[in-house]
Length: 125
Image (cartoon, rainbow, N blue to C red; front, side, top):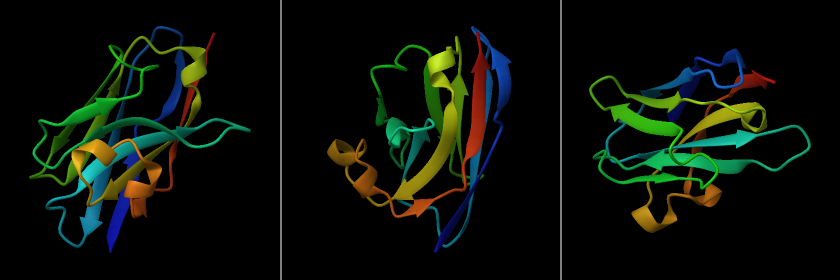
């Protein structure tokens, strides 16, 4: 079992920045791909970004490319999502997820077995 706890959400103005963190505990973090998803009110949960175990394989949704950056520190069992130039449409609950998956399936919600409780990100216009 892997427990995931997100932090770093909040209220920010358009163009501002936030850094989300996701701390993992429980069974070993080794080998897990980590992903970030988000869900806005009335919408389905959607893929945002993912990073493979080694950190060299990353993926982003087209809507966030060039603005968001994912990274991980395996020694700290933590994954980060640096969010820059935020827009009102980025407003959502952001969820951290972990799964043993391969690179070409990193964007699939079905590839992740463990989920955090989510952290709210609100971008005001």
